[in-house]
Length: 135
Image (cartoon, rainbow, N blue to C red; front, side, top):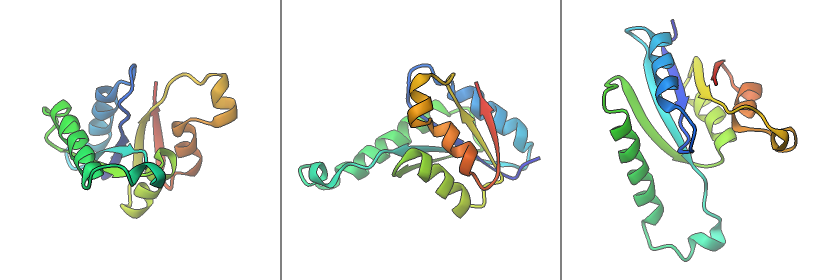
């Protein structure tokens, strides 16, 4: 069993967050800690200067509240929202917090993924731990 599991969460149509959470809870058994992580893309500085003071913090808090509400029945899941680039930030978070397994949802790769690469593909290639991909 894994002791420290990370579940990256994207707010996109067609993403089944609950399936990833349930798999993570199963992989962690009764002792494992599960963190649901959402990465808010950084706002470019030329845009950020026009935002009201505290706007990004308010946005992050709102996303945390929505995620916590969606995961209401999963008491052992910790909700975390950070700012950055999804692919890099997930790997960095896993490294910094000694994550031993990442459970990440992925769509079926399309032609655009051959050129750009998906977040899941980047995480699989660079993660410091085991990665379980959910389709």
